[in-house]
Image (tube, rainbow, N blue to C red):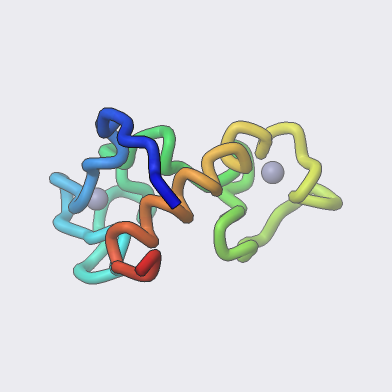
Length: 96
Ligand SMILES: [Zn+2]
Ligand SMILES: [Zn+2]
């Protein structure tokens, strides 16, 4: 299967938070930016609901909404999950 070679977007090259040194892809290091929310993480990799910080990648969090999967505030974050999945797979080599 031939993969189309596309120019790497900035978020695809993101590795370690320049603020605290946390490695988002592998989970190495201490995530120590304010509120555990690294401001340097590209928007395309932000999988947290804007309102309640529900994590759409791990589906963990305390969502005040009845169903975080359909919460309208989480729409942008949900659309980033696939980005994050592919990016993390590339980072950790899980993609093979
Ligand atoms: Zn950080
Ligand atoms: Zn929400």
